[in-house]
Amino acid sequence: MKSIINELWHGNIIPQEDSRTNSPEMKELLSYMARHHEDLEKSFTDEQKETFEKFHDCWSEYMSLAEKAIFVYAFKLGARLMLESLE
Image (tube, rainbow, N blue to C red):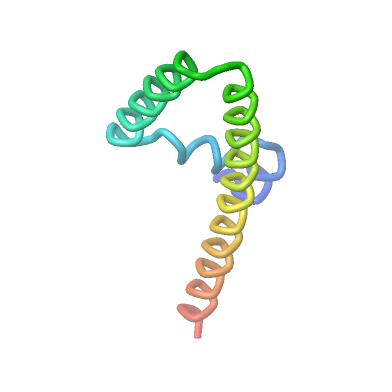
């Protein structure tokens, strides 16, 4: 059996990539979002496009930080559950 810790260390397990689009509902939602994003950009002036890009960059950074926080919380919770189950 492979060590999950080693697999994680070597980058063979990438939770943020594996969990983002793993359901049909998420894939469908991403498709809708992409379509609406394109429609919005077509209607923007150059200045509005620049503002929207800045917003999009900030939102992406925020989501990255939020995903990290959720991962850390869930990992710690899982470890606590494991420890309690050994008592």
